[in-house]
Length: 286
Image (cartoon, rainbow, N blue to C red; front, top):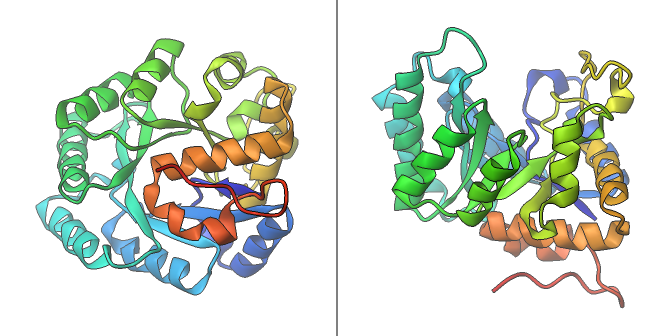
């Protein structure tokens, strides 16, 4: 009944047991997994993963941490592969792209150029974006508004209420994952509680951002435990408790929100969407 809107299931951490990890997620009620690329070298990898595992869909993009060495040839590769993927129902958008002003040593101007050029590709093909917004919410949002990109997800959102409002007004959804499970993450938990339900989607960012039960909640530390897509069910439990709603209400809402953010997901309603009363799947937005 859940969809993990951001999971790097192609990562090397899953090489020993990738299928078992996906099976465990399905057993936990996770019916869909969105797998974003991070660089041109893994475009084929995420596509092949989604095409052999019916639970997965994929996005193509160049992550800001992979921006060193990524230039016009990589952008040309991205555009060609996007064009070639438009007929693939498992292709859902451009990502993971964005800006990272937390990690030292990255060229801010080069990151911004690469991000803007990828937004132009998203706009050209009318595609959604999966956004990396680490210490860069204002700058990422400003370029979205400038280029008129109005669908997608601000992944692992950790900004202010005002920054959240601006993303939502632009038409984006906000991704919440393991961070919301820490009792000391007061700002994130406040956002998860107070923002409109229609603004929220669930994610893991597996193998990263492990939830509190795999870490040390007492000190708010995320240890190097491997996160997995199955943990989105636990994130959902925490989110439902924070908001005082039942699991099915949250599942139906976050499914609708995921489809609003990534409309190409609508093709998978029969296999991913949570059931309505009577056993039918949820309707998708028009």
